[in-house]
Image (tube, rainbow, N blue to C red):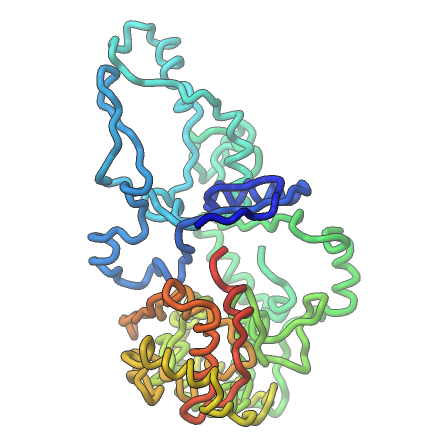
Length: 489
């Protein structure tokens, strides 16, 4: 069954790396763009986390992340006398599928081809003569030169934050880089300052020395994405005057050395509030709601204040230490953006620093709603529907009493993630699936499959509403619109 969609200026078929960049550029030019994508969403933290042993059946045998030759393939021939035929089984170089799939496996390499590669047939003949190539040699020029493509190389690297050390800038060889690469228009970008202003000079010098020991990473922010007047950089002077407080961290008199160390790590180096503290309309943290949680990038960053209902007030110091070290407690596991924090940061910290963080967080005031609202009645239609859906889809792992499996499958009963005022994280996990964090201390990384293909928006909302109001839980109902907004587009 077909349906006619409203007319638009441009239709992009395939919203992957190339399609999304094209769509972005055309949308900025004022065109109305609609993208059509049949593949699944690809996300680093859920599809291929670096610390997780892959599912061999799913990836190696069924090749889940890669293009199905039956759907779309390439043609191939060994010489000019053959008829090119479709490839029916991939070899080593597997084309990725889905949104972002071209960045997977061998495709996830971003080196630049050498200028000679673009004209290797004509360049070979020019240097060595026509006789250097056999008559049946299929070497061809690409039809485009390195100089013509350099602007696109440069654009992609800066859009995606590709890092490295430039070896050739405008024809000038750079020390430490690849001297054989083609000339670049500009070098390979910076981090937030509202929290890092508290870092001591000793720590900033140590970080600088470490960064100098590795190839630098750049992540240039594309200023064109900011609407007027935020795209005027001088506006930041006004923002800084109102919201920015420069100055290094100063220990609080009367507090223990451990508490002050935790305060320094949480408010400075760890910049926990950058995600966990709600911001105002101008992007400044609301000090009165510190660590109260907020929606961010399709997730709901949880409350980590001392609130016992939705925060970590009921957690012990050792619970927090264990979570930050291993990514798991007996009832919950890190996933999504927090999994990256554990993997690349807290799992590598000393036990003393982790304990200091826990001691400081436990001493912070409770934020957000302090008591649970009355739970929804189990007899209303949505709860009945949700209970049936839970039994059919969730109970096998999370158990009928919502207790899960200790240290493996998160409990839903009493879980603060389930009770947050926003249900974005829950909806995203159900729709897209998720894989938990794996660390050296806790290498098991259980994954939850996607149910987005099986449940519609209303069903996802109903089963989440049930989970948020069963087994002693109590939280607002989830609306289908929330789920719809989190589905891959």
